[in-house]
Image 1 (tube, one colour):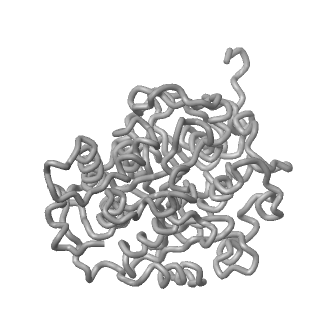
Image 2 (spheres, helix red, strand yellow):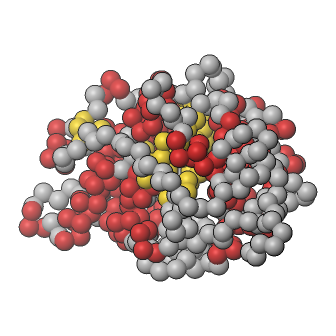
Image 3 (cartoon, helix red, strand yellow):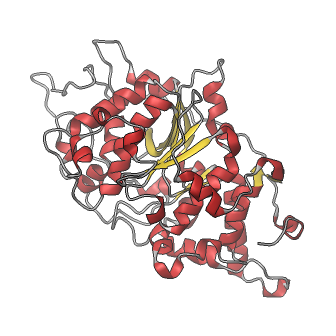
Length: 417
């Protein structure tokens, strides 16, 4: 990687260099060794949690580099952990989360289906946040800002009402939903506990996989999910059915239940909490901007990032070069994170995550001289000058449900559904 002086010309408005004194400059191997070593949780809530059920060493190289770069960027004030389910591992989930917080299928290893890894992550993220506090990030996420600047300062500010942070998105028309790949909260958060209680309940009674989750008595009153193509810039409808899409997002649906629920027993008001106490970052600009700019085309993203950046002769800078340059600088300056995912499997024609997973592409995210390598470099060495503002959650005419957290909803007699 070229030094700083040769990269000054690549800085665009909205970007400044981070002093090297604030960057963890240890080798990848040293940081990886730390990530695989048990570290006791202190009284600090500044924990970053991630999970890969088969362990850090089995992660795809580009996701390993994501996490290593979290450590580099965040410095010593945050502790990053990637937990697993590997027997004998120093970072086995059992060392952090008691079995009572996890579904039977997780504890006994009876989960089935194609999405064991993602749904195992769904099972552990909320208890980790509830017990210890911090930020959950999926390992497919690249970080372009410090977590303090993204949301944690807002959560810690006693003058703010915020107790949580997340990424907001509209999946069903007129509804402000929240994704679960980035969640921030201090320990003991009541919303986090209720959300997890719901998810635990839908995985009871011998459930081992996702099929039919949308029909569970706690979720069957909620609308089936689908991704609108207009404001998401999708090229067309998803290539899986809405029921399968909704089942895949069962954890998301448990959030949906809670945000629409007013508990007549303990007075918890989900709509009010969602509107006033969650620092909502707009997902389409703060984590999926790369999708918005490329119409969710993984092959196009791969093409842009694989383009050679180190071209000295201006006459050799093609239209593709300029598109790639604009794309990467926009991401580095104007979005907090970049969340690459693999699913729902089959939903789109191509995912960049799948392409980088392939053995022939294991180093394409750091190939010297490319815009991908520059994006990696910038994620560590550049800081943004813009201020992140929450996206207000508007008052909604959506139906609310006066039920306890674990009480099925039943339409009043005489009401047609």
